[in-house]
Length: 398
Image (cartoon, rainbow, N blue to C red; front, side, top):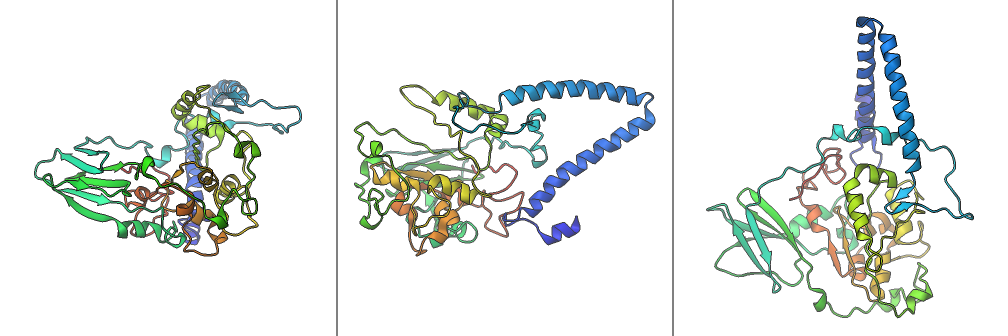
C-alpha cells in the first residue's frame, strides 16, 4: 500500500491512482471484515453452517427476484423503455445489473455526507433592474463586503486552463469593495455575479447581465461563419436552416460521468423533476438513448457531442453553441468547473491561444463562482480526492 501511494497519488486525475487505491480499500476492508466475522461465528455458534445456508438461500432468492426486475427496467428512460426497431442493433450479451441490488448509499457511504449543512441566512440581497445592489445584514456592527467576480467570457484560452491558471486569474481579478447603506451601490452592465459577506455569513447572487434586450445584434465573423458550407464541421439539416417555425429553447445538461441506470439509481428525485418538464405542446425532453462511450475519457466523448468529431480535421473548430448563436439564438453556458471546455478538451486544436472561444460563441458565461476557494482551493494541490473540483465528497459553495 505504501509503495502504491508513493508511486501515484492520482491527484492530477490523469492516472486516477490514489482514487483507485481508495476504491480498492473500500472493497478490501469490508470484505475482510465480513470474512473475519463469519470465521468467528463458525467457531463460536453451534450449527452455524445450517443457519448460514438458510441465510444464503433466502438471500439468493431475494437477489434473483431483484435482478429479474432490474433487468426489465435496465433500458428505461425518463418516459419509458427504448423502442428498438427491427433494423437497429439491440443489446447483446447477458446483462446482470448487480449494482442495483446494493442498499441505498452503499456506493458513497465512505465519502461522507452528500448533503450540505443548512445554515441560517443572515443576509438579504437584491439587485434591481437598474443594477442597484441593496444589502440588509442582520448581524449588528458588521461591515458588509462585496466581491465582484470577473466576467470570463472574453478571456483568451491561455487564461482558462483548469490545471494551472483559471482559478488564480479569477481570484486576482475579483474586486473587493465595501458596502455603505447611505451610498447607492450600482453594478455595471457586465457584472453577473457578486459574493456578499457580512460577519460570518456570506451569499452568492447571480443575474443575467446585460439583459437580453440590451444585447447588440450579433453578426458572425465572415471567416468562421458556420452558416457558410466551407467553414462548418457539423452538418445542419436544410429543414432547420430554412424553417419558418419558431425556434425552440434548447438546454444541454451533461452529468459526467453517469450512466442512465446510475442516474435513476442515485438521483431519483432529479429524474422525477425531469419527467415533469415533458409537457406535449409546451416542452419536450429529448433523451439520447443511442449516445454511448466513443472514447476512454471525457475529452473524446464530449468532442463527439459538441464538435461532431473526436479528431477534427480542421483547425479552430467551434463548439455547437456557436452554431446556435450564428443562427440567431442567445447562447449561455454554465461551466461547473474552474475552466473552459474549449480549452480543456479541444485547446490543442486552436492555432492561437489568445483566441477567445467563448467571446465568439457565447452571449453569457458563468464560470467564476466555481473558481472560488470554497470549491477550488487556491493553495496547494487542488486535485485531491477530498478537496477541489474532482473531490468525492460534497462541496458546499454558499
